[in-house]
Amino acid sequence: MTQKLWGGRFTQPTDKFVEEFTASIEFDQRLYRYDIQGSKAYAEMLGRQGIIAVEEADQIITGLNGILEDIEAGQFEFSVALEDIHMNIEARLIERIGTVGGKLHTGRSRNDQVAVDIRLYLRDEIDMILDYLKKLEGSLIQQAEENLDVIMPGFTHLQTAQPLLYSHHLLSYREMIARDSSRLRDLRVRFNVMPLGAGALAGTTFPIDREWLAEQLGFDGVTRNSIDSVSDRDFAIEFCSFAGILMMHLSRLSEELILWSSADFDFIELSDSFCTGSSIMPQKKNPDVPELVRGKTGRVYGNLISLLTLMKSLPLAYNKDMQEDKEPLFDTIDTVKGSLKIFADMIMEMKVKSDNMRIAAARGFSTATDVADYCVRKGLPFRQAHEVVGKTVRYCVETGKDIPELSLAEFQEFSPLIEADIYDFVTLEASVNARKATGGTAREAVERELARLKLT
Ligand code: ARG
Image (tube, rainbow, N blue to C red; front, side):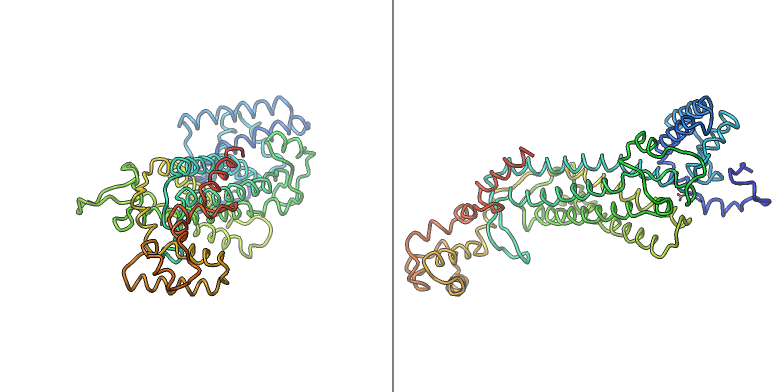
């Protein structure tokens, strides 16, 4: 039987299945680096404060460094009997350096230890995710810059609405991703405070220096209430909520890429390296990557709901339930990182079929609003202009004509206000470029926006 670190009170060994059932080592081993980082700083602080001898602290730190090397070299056997990453490392430390290793946990509990470990881990992951988000933003911006001539149909209700600059459409996703980054930076500020020193829940009887520890570990400050320090998983929930919103955005982009690469739309071609074929239908090239990202959105939402439900009604302070926080959080991190990474590359390599987009943009009377706006500028109240153009469109539908194909006489049937210059307003370019105000789809507005993004 492996010697339990908490074995003192017990006379019977733990049931084997209970051991497996209660263990988290299989998934929390990914925290090893942060557990060691936290423990090294903690040991040094114990030495500085005279709670243990400086030489003892040094021995502990050397021992922990050795364990880190062993784990990274794949030479550490994780034991289910030792339950979690914290006790696996501590038990090995005692094995390596002897009883002095048992001094590391002075004044500390696994409750504040795990709280600090997840924060250190999540902080690193967040910094990586912020980089991935930047990269995806970069891909969208680059595609927007390279395709400034492309006009596509804009949709509402998935019905052709008004022509858009394709770049403008791409940059709308840039906005979403930028808001996601800002949400992530916000929550990072909120959670980057150090919970160590809370002990099990009430604080510690030893004269520890939490502020020094916080600084060592790169935290912006210390948590202010020991009970909250070990009970709080808000940061994991906030992260999963950020992730849910991000995946919702990616799922919308995915959906559009899937539609656009279908034979019916035929607006884009995804690079072969992001698609697969069908085992039966030789003609198929399936947009697997966006489909999977769209699908994975579900598990990320699920993880958020898992965490919210996990924490719901839990009495203070730590409860073993909270060990269940890790898998949803880890899965969310992995899913988000994978999705962002693959999307940045896929967008970069995506080819636009500008002719097809243009043909589609001209269909569906996409410049009808421009005719209405034209009438308004000639003095007609908008509601009446809407009516005039509605009738014009019905006439077009009945006669199989498109708006720019109508003769001046035909236009004038609907309103005498319409003159020969109407033809300057109903081309795709005219329609797009008329929308010049900040945030509009006019080429000059989009170029201004791209220039602004370069400066930020
Ligand atoms: N493995 C535990 C978790 O992840 C560590 C904290 C355990 N604390 C305790 N008192 N059992 O939640």
